[in-house]
Image: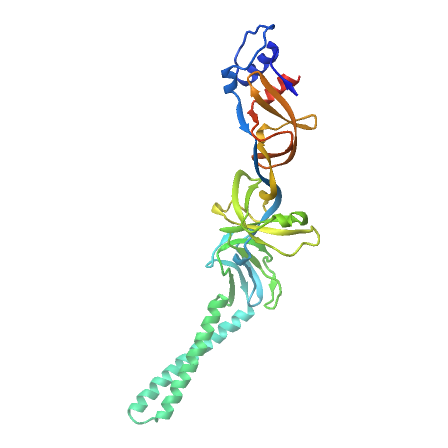
Length: 359
């Protein structure tokens, strides 16, 4: 379908919308685009290119399991204080929760007894040394005293390690600390709760979030298109910025409910902007077999449930051409019919030209 600017009304419409140039036209004389009007347009050349497809992905932020720790109680007791809530940042020095524990009091009692035994064994060994020097004690008795001292020292060291590992404080208090620095993702404890040492459930879940995964759902039909190392453009609802990452892991098990597999993208999480369970969308391009005519996506006009482009032949000859769009990516549209390689298309202000020619 070919049309040209033959009336001043159409030309004035285009010029006013595209470049605000006022023209006094002679209605009896055919018109063509001026150089100034041409400068308001952008052009693209249709080319034969490797066919590409694009998949839109949905997923969410999850912590790296290698950086996630569940904190279990090592001894039982009654909770007397809880110092952190979900989302708080903790380190290995701070007490998450403190318990008043009978087991801790037993350890405290054993430690005090071990310290007394050590002091007695130490004093006895010193006495045996003095007696051995004056021949009032035998070498065998000195060896026994030394052995008792070593055993007492070993028991004392053992109980001190228990104190350190269990974080037991004076007065029979048991302090639960996180073994890693990170954010609390789950909390299953409250004041006055009775905690058993053999409980199967954990008290806290703590994760480092300086690196996180974005886990995308991949439907069965798209599984062959997904490969390790493919680049994904990621966006969150909380930000308009695009994050670029690569697929670092593809799971092999299909979820029986969603009928999808997970493809993971590992990302640096500067400023902890990516938070667990945050929704993410992604776009992934993949290569297909064969070649097809490719044009700038901006050249496409959708009208009356059809796709059109404006083919530029000359200032006096601009054609409205219907095309078949095979697929589109962020920047490129692949055309299955309606265009040939080398044809010149308008990619900016083409809507004004289209309206002027097709009203």
